[in-house]
Image (cartoon, rainbow, N blue to C red; front, side):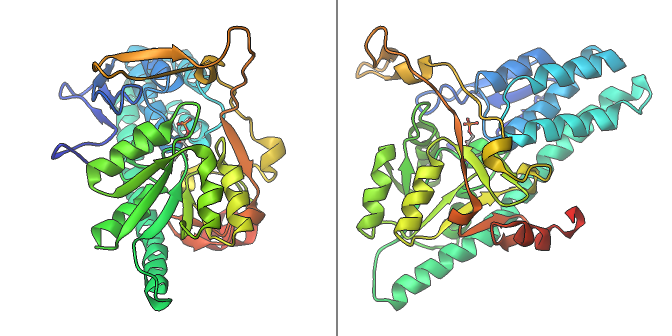
Length: 367
Ligand code: MRU
């Protein structure tokens, strides 16, 4: 996608052909900074500190992290160490272990001198595949938005298709295009009138800072709302459909996504509003059936809850404390939305029911 007229992905190889560059997402929306990664350890820090985040982008960064690590040490021990260090960064998004296992399986059988070139080539391929997958699911999902626009017209309602999204599942969460936002970009580019309700997504505010930023850059109408506002808007007919992303999807169609997604799905169910989840096939964990019991939920620093940062009126970035000294805080980063609350899954192979049968129809090789 474009930033000030220039096309960007979220991760790319630097001009020198070996270092890796990323957009520092901890500084958005107020500053657009690029970071250069030169080692596997630094790539791991980029993931754990959330300079990059979003399940598909975490996977692509891990793949490039393996390439950077193998550049330093291509021995079996070097490959295993890099795998372990990168795997320890964040537990919930399955793309991390998927990309790391893929890289390790490719590299270990190769002669040591061939490993570095193979690692860079595979990391680039994982990134390119992610772009193609995001674009494909965007096209499938856009059909839902087109249909919602048509049914609005048929029922005599005017105005845009109002879509609620949670967290950031846009191009910043992937290599390009996004997951939940990809259908919105495709529909918008086709001339459909859309408006996005953006959940701010406490505690890290990926909605308020990242989703709002990227929608604004693309010219998509949007309104940031407090996380608790969605139910009220649904009761008053202000939301036509919800689309979120997912960090791990079980083979039964349960979806583990940013904390608060489950509450939005409950409210959508109560108000009879379609609730879709958009996902690249790389976020399906075919080994897991029961999302609530089997998916590890990341708990992050309590300071992400007790403190907040933003830009002051004089343009400085400042961090302030919200809570009284001594109050405990807990920071659960993800929750699981059971398949029964999900209208459908938008994948890069089409849209299916949120169920094992639905997923297996699109992915018969996993039977
Ligand atoms: O903690 P984050 O920012 O890495 O969380 C990931 C997300 O952005 C969302 O949960 C998203 O909906 C899924 S990733 C496309």
